[in-house]
Image (tube, rainbow, N blue to C red; front, top):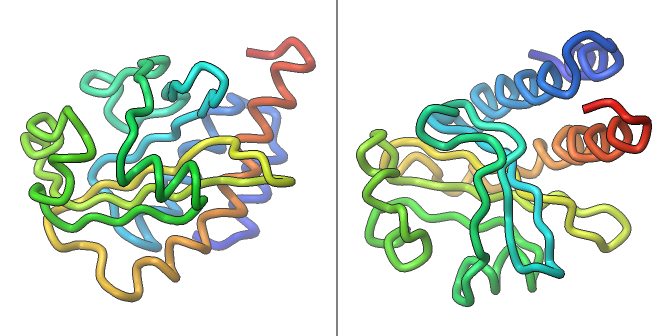
Length: 165
């Protein structure tokens, strides 16, 4: 998938924002590889994150909410606004309390990519795949998902401002 396809999908009014989320998922699959893909909005006032898209809604439902705990993930993604990368369940376990569910899905590596506009963290693009999937080149590849991810998060803000859900 090329960026033009993403832009065309983003501009198309049909089935938004889901269509754009699915195109972003396809970009992530081609760019870094994913078994599980989610988009998480962040509400720093309530210190919560909530899913607005999930490639596996039966396991990770949309609108699922969770508190953002103190620790390495929050330090990396929320405070430093950097990509969080872990390549084993041992690295995931202290960060994600649902590590057993993650492992049961065949995932053991994670990339959490913050989407930031004007200094504001809009949310996080979450890519999970098998153990060891995200090597040295993965962080650079993941950065290419930031701009399309920002567009998706902004689309949800724009649509809600116009009364579209």
